[in-house]
Length: 358
Ligand code: FNR
Image (cartoon, rainbow, N blue to C red):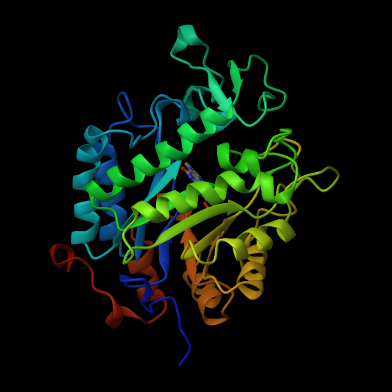
């Protein structure tokens, strides 16, 4: 019998009860210094009671300057791990696998929250100097924050920050660590020739542009125990057809290089440049990239983007287009997406509502 949405799946010794993963989604709800609050406990906790197989935190910064906004989660100290520990514990108690997305925002850091305009924050507004492979700012920004072209020492510091963050994540009780290398943030900026103009061993050729991603994933893999999985999220393409940019062909090549290091490629797209031309934002709009990486590598993939219907998510698994259905915005509309999917798909006998709700 082929797998479906309610088939369990194991990555190393970690088993998810079904194929639904809550996509990482920033909540901009830390009160200060990147510590998790009641909002994170309730928000992530309710997606776990909702039945998802894996619940992933929002992009969680490995160092203070890697936050998008001052209100993002961080995981650069023991205090951050202590604040996230109840989140990971509750997710696990509800039968979901707790996962953390480790991130650095690069040139897209130092912004106000979306509901405060998503505008660059200057130093007198609580902003900070951002760091990126090259000193070009996020294009077309009116008043970009100061940007620092990273030295090789800075790169080493960031790689070390991912290692330290992985250790704190483990201490907090997370089972999966996902490296965020998508959406125009720091690691994606290194990958793409549209943002990386370096002339040292971190820029230029494919090997050079991908070097920091290999270093980060390998260092996280070294910290993360052998029985626990490491994922990576990539943007499969920059959607910049008319200029030198990151492409699906390079994504396949990178995925093959990472096949011994990561256990799943979480396949998103875009976010590097405002000139991107997104062919569609309809149902399954990024699935073809996930499917292609799945076909041309040996690594499981997660598909994300425009997955809103249970039958649609189920078909992705049944038709072997993806190994996980990664659901973002639909989880904001319905924390109980998975339990409702079970009802719609006639799979009520394969997952139970929390006892308190039965
Ligand atoms: C996101 N997305 C996102 N992606 C990511 O890798 N890390 C993150 O922290 C965030 N933050 C975030 C916040 C909010 C409010 C939204 C809506 C989205 C992108 C998200 O994970 C997902 O890839 C996209 O939303 C597309 O999937 P859906 O929403 O069509 O299922």
